[in-house]
Length: 114
Image (cartoon, rainbow, N blue to C red; front, side, top):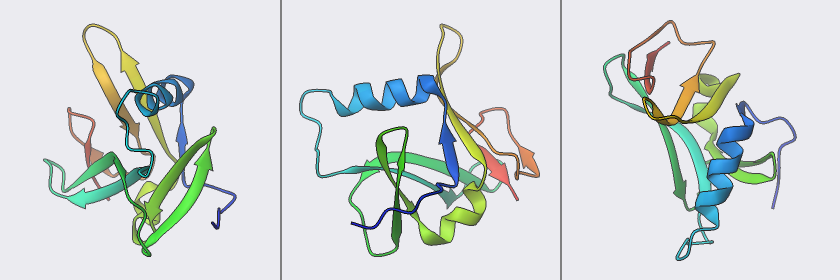
């Protein structure tokens, strides 16, 4: 298994904690790795992907704060410098994405344009 030293994305402590909690849930498929990526769509043109998935030959694997992560090689340019956060408050709950490279974002925090 090849691991690249410098991952293009960072996770806050709360995001790491929530991801590790999810990975320790009963019935979690340990054959899957956390995928960070992008896909077309969303109100600003691109949407972030954060899900557990199987590694393909298009992926590079990283280790971020002890969490194995896969990112499709072609997506790295869109994700460089991005920070993933977990907000567990009553008003906003879920993962948020702070991307310094996005030229515009929308209110949902999961869609962006470059």
